[in-house]
Image (tube, helix red, strand yellow):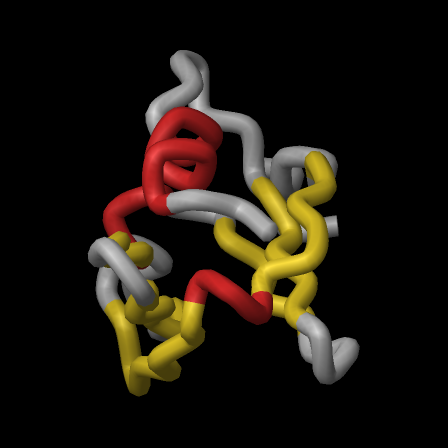
Length: 82
């Protein structure tokens, strides 16, 4: 199980490295901007990035921290969109 401090430490890496958060149900959340995750003591709110502005969210999902099973680095998205 990951703590809120574990997740915050990972999101605060500089330079930021995109991360995939995997939860116990097998669902994944790809985070390409750290401002789209709000971490609390027992859960976190993950924003799904807007197509128009990846730093803004379209919708959110609440995830209990006790269900986070893994965090994996993702390659940074290419500037050309490929």
